[in-house]
Image 1 (cartoon, rainbow, N blue to C red):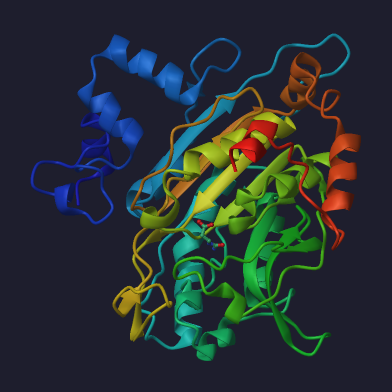
Image 2: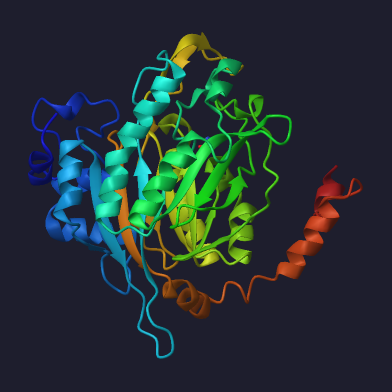
Length: 416
Ligand SMILES: NC(=O)NCCC(=O)O
């Protein structure tokens, strides 16, 4: 694999004959952005970027540099490292509220056939240098990907994978609590949870660890997919924690776990509870969702006047026993390629380019949270929302005697 420096000099492209065949690359490039940058003339690339990524405070989003300790780690451990800055306008009465936020994407560390304890340990060792790089960069709030402490084995429907489940204060939380304390960082820990106080039931849960290493609270995934190989309903039920917003030392955050991003009301509810940053830790594959990926989070950020941090795992995970999902496809042993592409979206419709489509990565961004209210004032989406209309519509819709409000063209009746 080409070095970080070679890739930078080559616009993120593979050195000839090297990564062209890397599974998940886009014609040898790590991301669409890097492909365009390497292939378009600079003024054309600038205009394409304006259209694809928007503008922040009337300018292209700025890259920022990170300390050498972070870049050295990214080179030593071969993870993509990118950093940006979202500005807001200066205000008379409020100071800027700038927080530094990080997203981590990763592939699994050992084959899915390895001992479960070894797989977990190897995953912790794998993400550690990325967390250290976030710490060296003074990241304030960091979020990992959905069920980061295991392969995304829910495609198989086999119950042996339940062994990966942990209590809220289990192994991965304890591991991250130490790092939260060390780096004075809020860390969001999305895991497969074993609820020991409620009959050892299983949930898909995000645990919010405060910057003192304390557990602030949890959120459980609200919407469970029943699409393609995402057979997650075999393992856990829809969450029972509502739409909590966690007020941390660095801002009000919420977590909309993976498939919840297809539900605009889910995004809305986190916004109504006052979220300033909503994380979307995910596990999703190219064939199913890639055209939706850059749109849904960005739309949520715009519609709800908050920042969104989207995270997706990377790589292809092979399972020992082939499975089918009742969709007519021949039996297979993997989900397909998890396409990474983690990024941030802002309430002013700007967004960062994405991390690599196939390498581990740490995305860092500064964001002035004042932008949230500035966009509320500018566009007035909260004030024009007409929530009462929708509350009435939904309460009617939920009744068994609901009939859709359809006005039929009388001419249609005559023709019959
Ligand atoms: N993990 C998960 O909910 N995946 C569902 C697929 C998708 O929403 O793209």
